[in-house]
Amino acid sequence: MAQSQGWVRRYAKAFCKGFFVAVPVAVTFLDRVACVARVEGASMQPSLNPGGSQSSDVVLLNHWKVRNFEVQRGDIVSLVSPKNPEQKIIKRVIALEGDIVKTMGHKNRYVKVPRGHIWVEGDHHGHSFDSNSFGPVSLGLLHAHATHILWPPERWQKLESVLPPERLPVQREEE
Amino acid sequence: MIFSGSLATALKIECIVEQTYGQWWQSLHRTMLRGVLGKTFRLVGYTIQYGCIAHCAFEYVGGVVMCSGPSMEPTIQNSDIVFAENLSRHFYGIQRGDIVIAKSPSDPKSNICKRVIGLEGDKILTSSPSDFFKSHNYVPTGHVWLEGDNLQNSTDSRYYGPIPYGLIRGRIFFKIWPLSDFGFLRDSPNGHRFSDD
Image (tube, rainbow over all chains, first blue to last red; front, side, top):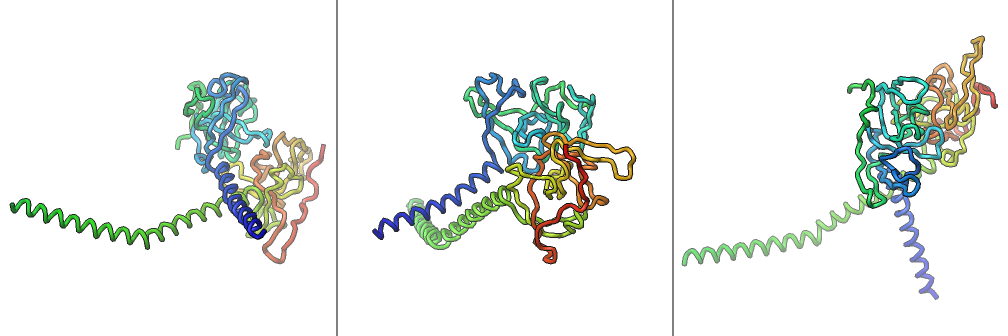
């Protein structure tokens, strides 16, 4: 009797110890270092989800790279949607603070990106809910930098930070 | 003969050196080095573990914050210490009149501390009370309108417009320092500056 009780207590103790170590470490890792996400929608075609709804790409999201809010033009980033805080959107960074962008479908033809903001666009213009709809977004909404496609296996690749040449900013802010 | 003799001597000396070196390394390994390495690994392990618990606590539950700046006087003075909780943000329970901490829209590394005056869809009076023609702004979806209690000395949504809800980090609900002002925070001293739709 005493032996079985001792066994249960030891098991519970080990479980609690493991729980309080493993869960915070895992949660911190997924929040601060990297996580994985499935991409939905067609706004980043052909870079992401070229097959439409048949096969959604799964990307590796790197939080560590954006811990100081440093992004480059051409990076594919995920951010909290400014119109719906429960949703994350994944777009490409077109312009940084101080650049002047020629917009496509925005109410102003040319927009200067304010300090602490970035201009993001989906690669599939016209089918993308991006800065052309809601304007420049604050860097505080930045969530992660999408670095690799992990699934499906035939689409394993590193995502390159290239700006489409027709979307270069009209005027850059020189460092 | 001499050559092979010196070679044998050299080999013997080498053997002895290796033996003593090996013994020295073994004794070190058994006593001191293992203890030091073991202690270092344990220290690093504990640091990572408690760091992760701290991150989870601050991110999902709440924490203690020190506020600086005059923009929330008289409710929160400069260098007051308050208690902030993050549960309301995750469950989307921020109400009008709450004091929130948010990331500054123009500098993501710094935080601002203001009161929520309007949620999405609200009509905000943006003209000053002395103007004859009143102008209103509607708060867009997914945004909030923030204002400091010290209207004369506060850079808030009257200056940079409504901010996205995603920038809010937590809600301040309790002041713990100075002790003369210990307790839950008061309502806005500015009355109602908004009209609901």
